[in-house]
Image 1 (cartoon, one colour):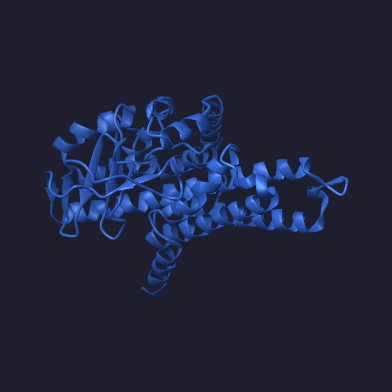
Image 2 (tube, rainbow, N blue to C red; image 1 turned 60 degrees about the vertical axis):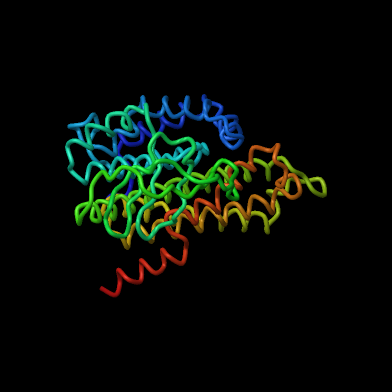
Length: 327
């Protein structure tokens, strides 16, 4: 089995990498955390122009078909750059509407999501009751345990998380009933798996960004007249961090290929823990400067734990993996 991306997939990832490198994403993240969504939406529009969100919708409504492997590769780059906003939730909402196969709903919502003209956040059964960035998203979808898909009329007060750029709110009850029944429940399960997969991809990219910045810093910071990167203990810590991230990578690709819930949970667990370990390594090796908000490193440090816990905490993912193995 081949676990290396094709040339076309690699080209797409490089395109996103170059676009994001030229977009001053750190400034957009800081503005987003302060309630100004304009710079973040500008980045969002440029991402949509590459066809990123089209990978989560069918061709009949402007998409390219459901392509989880390509989308996961793209979301690694989003995590590496620290892109703010409900990107995984928007893609999951597009998958939900595609899987639901309701022509009226698809025509109403999918073209805007694919083109980047609108965004979405959502809550699904078994997940967190809080919606991410409900104040910034165009649409707030909720799916109840009873299988009711609604367009929430709004959301409650915003609550900050460990990451100022990830703000949470409880959806207001009620709202327009869009669909109900077993088809909604099945589509919601698929959407939750996609949200978990894409969050795992963001975790991997976040961990890689943290490691790259830490390696660079270890080459520059000196103690006793030599760069700390030359110390054996530092080398071991960085090597352990790299191994954790590299171990997560094939699990992510395997999950994107199969979309089996157990494999998606395993990828999320491994990538999330690797990203969190990378954050702890970065904080330790940077020392006191790692705690300063002025340093861009703080933008990724603050994302590692919330992303690790979003769409499946480590304990929830372990339970999902075990449940799959016991079937």
